[in-house]
Length: 304
Image (cartoon, rainbow, N blue to C red; front, side, top):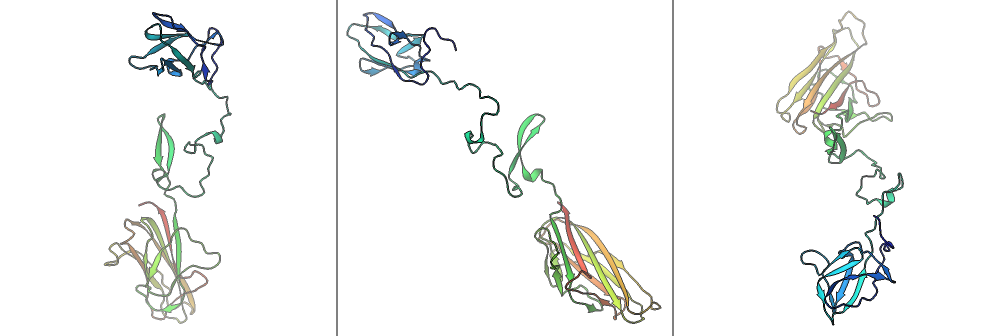
C-alpha cells in the first residue's frame, strides 16, 4: 500500500510523542520524533487515557484511527491525560515467494510433499489424490490397486506309491529346493486336504507321472475335488485320463494333467483334494523329494 510521509516501521513497537490534551477536543495527531505516523489499524495500537487502556475496535470503540489522526469517542477535557500511545507496527506483508524458493524444510510435516519414501506396498486405507473431472479428491488404495497375482504355491508328492489313492492323503511337501519360489502366504495341507489363504479366483493344476514295469494295460485317471463346506462334501471339478495298452513295452512311463479355475468366496470353508486312480494295481505313481513329478500348482489370479 502507498503511504503519505514516512512509512511506519514494520513489526516495530513505537511510542508516540507526548500529546497535550486540548479541552473540548477529540482528535489528535500522532507523531514519533515529530514525524507523523500511520498505524495500520486501531487494533495495532495500545492507548492509555487517564490510566485506563482504551478499547480499540468492535462495538462502541473508545477511539478510531484515520491516517495519523486518533479520534476519541468523546471530547477530552482539561485534566485528562493521554498516558501513552504505542503503535505495534504494520501487518507484515511477506509477498509472493519466487518460483522454487520454498523448500521442504519450510513445510509442516503434514503437508503432502513427497519427501518421505514409502518402503512397502501401501495399506488398503492409505490415500491417494486423484482428479475427478477436475475436482481433487482422496481415494483409498484398496479401491485402485490391481488384483494381480498375489499367491503362487507348488506342492508335490515326495514318495512313490502303487495303485489308487482317493485322495492322495500323505507324503505331500511344498517344493523346497534352492531355486523353488513361492508368492504370498501359500496353501496349508493336512492329510491331503488343502486350504486356501485367501478368497479369490484360483487356478489349480494337477500333474501325475506314472510308470509300470509289466505288459498289463496301464494308465491313471486323475481328478480335482473341491469342497465349499469345510470338507462336508466334495465335487469333482476336473478330470483327465491316460491309457497305454498291454501290447506296448514294459517299463512304460506316462503322465497326465488336469486343471480348473475356482472362485474361492470363503477361505475358511473351501477345500481342495486330489485323486489318482489306476486301471491296474501295478501302476506306480512317481514321487520325488527333489523334483516335481506328481505335483499340484495353486495360483491366485485375482479377486473373487
